[in-house]
Length: 262
Length: 348
Image (tube, rainbow over all chains, first blue to last red; front, top):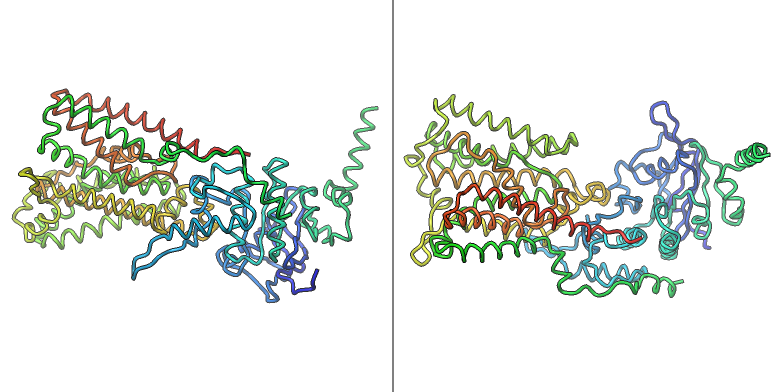
């Protein structure tokens, strides 16, 4: 692992919605070629954190720097133009549109004659097929609707799209949440592929078994606060699971249940 | 690692789609088959149907409906409805007629005023729908009723009756009439110029939809507006443009009508908005948006025209047309629904 400048660095970042403190004093880094996993239960502040990174919301306190400079993105488009691509679980693709049209949506290849422009369909199909193949996704027919693909494959198309259009940071919001075991494995492989291509990946999940194999760093959140940002060498899967499951709370619950049985 | 990934997604369960399977996912295929059936049926039961004047009659009937159906289809693919589209054809005709006959303006100038009026109403519809997030069904129902009231109220206020006539005496009637309402002789039979407008507009819309970036955006905003927005598609701008296109098509049909008949009734156009939607649905558009075809909608209008005139040629009571329409609509919706489920099917 080379020591490079971090892509994203957040320090003591916080966000309040009215009187609700959604996030407080959270710090972590995202390095190129590494995966930073954000783990936490529902309402832990995972979504708030990624919305700040993706430009949907802006932070109220602390610092957020992108490529060494202080950053504050006014819109998702601004974050995307800077190189931060976000793949949302349900909003990744348009099911009724073909694979290549989804791949190029918002950045369509065109042939222009003066004021007139039309889609370059041949290039769209070829480039989409090649870009997907490079990520190891072999689709025979890029004209088929994305809806005919499995949930995992859809996520993969969205990931391949972000990689192809030169994202430096890839934020994945619960990419494995609605998937079966095998499909989740497939998606994690593409997460690893994106990482190996030098992207900084932010993987949001509540499943430590998905996070541990691909992650380099684990940021644990609970009720808007950080429980710590651990390097992989500093934490084992068992400890991670323990922390995620609520640690002492769960032990207490176990005792309570056992006491109730006897 | 890379070796393993290369193998994972070559799914042995996927066979190469057959030609029939690839054809069946085209949205306009159902309408095309329907058109052939209707054409053959009326060619057999009626002697007049296939004569030159017969063809000119049902093509004319299909043409103005077709222009609107194509525009409505684009809007439906973009995920919205426009119930004010029918009455818009009357409003624009009335605006043109009032400016030309009552104020004595040149017809071309009056046409320009009514076009601006149509685009403004379309933009208002689109702005209100995108701004409030309300269903376009309700918003345009409001515009529909408002325009219907305006048509009657303003016409009665200005002319004292519910019709505006006297277009033939206005400046520029000849040249405008040539563009919007002339006839072409083909083999001694006059064909209305509106047929050319219909075919031209359908071809343009068909090209726009599948061959341009805007077309890609139309499918995307109707298929999943949130996904489209997330990748930077200007969702609101696309939708407003679609509402304005529908209104502009209403202006075109209104202009064709006013210049052909030289007078306009204030109560025209009411109820036609459903015919446009039916033609678009028969042409393969989904009511939920994101799927459909401009060419399909044009074919849907052709079925409409052939059946409506075919029933007359066959000397049947025209009451039967509504039965036919209902059956055709149900059939089309069932077929479309099957296609959509094919396309949206999730394999996990």
